[in-house]
Length: 433
Ligand SMILES: NC(=O)N[C@@H](CC(=O)O)C(=O)O
Ligand SMILES: [Zn+2]
Ligand SMILES: [Zn+2]
Image (cartoon, rainbow, N blue to C red; front, side):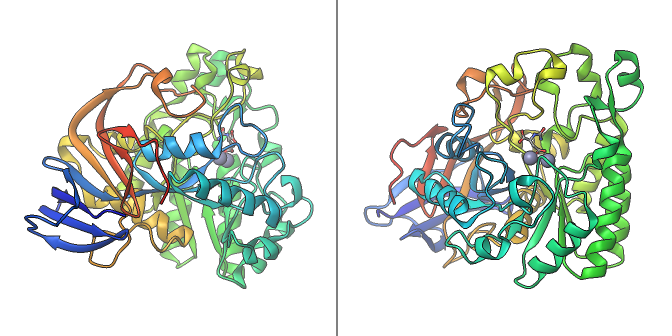
């Protein structure tokens, strides 16, 4: 592989340096005039961040390759500045065996756009009845550490307890989709003033908060790790804050859409705004932003949920929940944390890369450039803006809630072990290492 010389990049907002990459790793940092035959990337005016890491991606393969594939989804990831994604288990078949997680990992390697870390199901078929082959998935070539029935809540407390006790034996964790199912039967949107006005059945905040409270207690009782997916309410933040103050082994993520959009969007009856958990109130958005800045919420995760046109372009009640996220996440995060002029790149790197890499156990990711570290980076233009055009996204699906919006910050390049997966804002077509 030819060497790479990144010239004059602002390293995570701390000042401009040149970075020389050799054999996929950082060889030298400083003022580097020339480096033999190295490919030179001019990063003047660009900020270098550790490659983003997504704890929550739906790649839809196997089973719904019409909506996304590992190939298309990881291209979208690279475009969004990601170098690693955790692929959720709600595929068809479900990723509840060593065979499926190994297949997903292998497809990720073959595509070459981002490291794909499969998430294993907690229960067989995500049905919440019987534990899946957690040990076999952990010992498989995919080395699964994170388990989740995402899309469904592990609502049975005894199943949750057993899963926690099991993953604790090898340092794994359970990522919980917190939704008390009896409280959300038939739910279509956030329960509140807007749902009452529209006459749509509500998804009350307490359905999320009750499960988070229970699982905090189970995490403390078992001593195992719980991660909360897509936290969406102000009260959830309070519960997590108190749990952390007591030393509970819990972490939490927030999705970009919950940092920007509210249940007011449902007034359009456009199913592009239908998502699980639902868009909440302005007051929740404000608390989530504060909690992310502060670190009570540990990470931004996209919950990238591609859906085929027939599953979205229909009446609200019939539409599937979920929205695209990978290509817009960084821009929305920058917006939510105060806008590009105020951008605190260290905090952004912490919430979008370093902390999620640590939670997922992806040791080669989430690293600032230092001699010896793998060159998993993204270069962003903090001064540029772009307009979201659904047809121009790398995802196979089109269900972005940001169509037509002008967003801050563009991804100019993404490097996976020193190889450009995106360069000059364009996806590389050749990805062999
Ligand atoms: N977020 C969603 O609304 N949908 C997700 C499942 C999930 O994350 O719960 C999906 O797989 O489509
Ligand atoms: Zn979920
Ligand atoms: Zn999800």
